[in-house]
Length: 282
Ligand code: GUN
Image 1 (cartoon, rainbow, N blue to C red):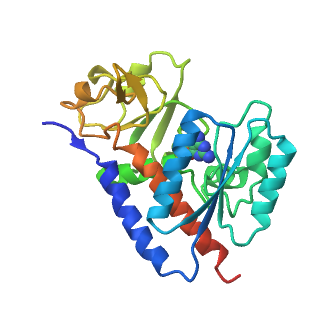
Image 2: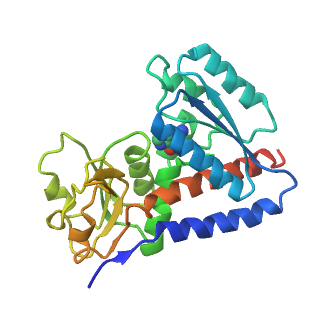
């Protein structure tokens, strides 16, 4: 038996088509403000991909591209302007920001109602309280959507996460806990990590180490989600050794074509939702 391949590209395409349809019925075009400070190579690519994907489904984007030396106060006043502009529905500040800027101070300034990245403490706090936030961060939300495709009932499942980042590991752990899973979050200081991963019904690797997870790390018939994007031997690969686990797992996400396309689809979904939330009668 070989594992089922969870085709994130196809699922993301389906979501984008549905969004395009729904957006075409709106009286106005939802509008996403993207703030980019500096010229980090990866950030430039991510931002371009977000703009392209948005345009394809009829979402408007405005890029505010500021210089590397932009002062924190200047960035805060741009956020204030976007917050107060009723024609802007969603705001994202591409991370990482230059070292002289306090990232938390910037994120905290975004209106929770426009925080389509789901990073504002109001939204993360609501998730933590198992209440409904306005927005959930795109990558965790995309991963939940992929897992639900192969495992609709998560109650009681043993979930192990490799990586405790603010953008992926921690919010995802909370989402899984809210679905009644038993969750372990591992990180670089975790001892005997394989004792944990071998018990995982669902294993999520988000640590940025190429092909770390081998077949002998996993439980037979487990679901494997690979968030890593690494370069090894001139090729893109994930944190899971895909070829090694294929004969043992029940389902696995490929890299590329698994989690990556879902992240953009969920950002678009959040921007559509922002428009709807802001146009609801009070
Ligand atoms: N940098 C890496 N991932 C993300 C993301 O999801 N949102 C933003 N704003 N920046 C990022």
